[in-house]
Image 1 (cartoon, rainbow, N blue to C red):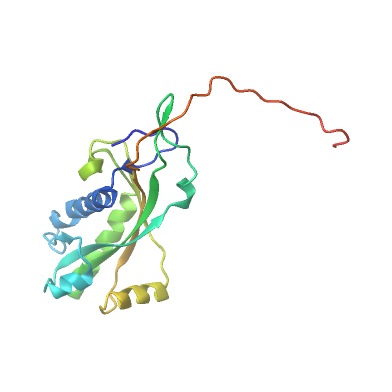
Image 2: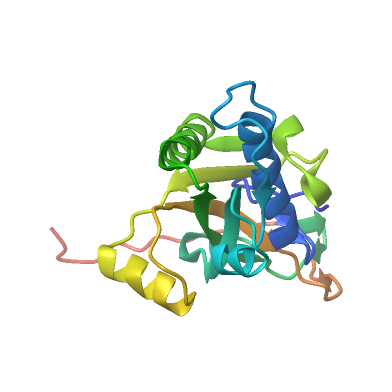
Length: 206
């Protein structure tokens, strides 16, 4: 785990996707699988897609499926992470992760209860940090931001079509920001010792 300078940026090695997924899985497990509520308690959280669960004959679970990885454009131009006065790390790769959270249950009422619980959890836990972080994020000062993603009916239909699975009620969840740190050696550059500037009056300017 690497320290960062400036705006908060979650930085891990190449295990960023796994660590973010495990953090979200444990959050759902704590509030669904371990719940005392008979409608949702005991239901396992699974990282496989709904299609994979169906093929494995799993009829009761919550699928937490990472289906898209995209760049986080707002963080592409952040200053290079400084390691010392004259050392800089290569710029990390900031990512947005898109999950499809799908409740599977043979009973319609319990399926709706599970889906509602997922919505409640994401809304109540918009920022994950400290003890909530798992895997390679544990013990770091990183932060994951959760939100319910906005998708159109066409986008949802296309997603289920690509899954070769019937359309299901699901919760699209976005996680920001997971960054993969460069494995390249740090770069050396002399520190800035002095800084100067000069202003010139423009004749005729209002």
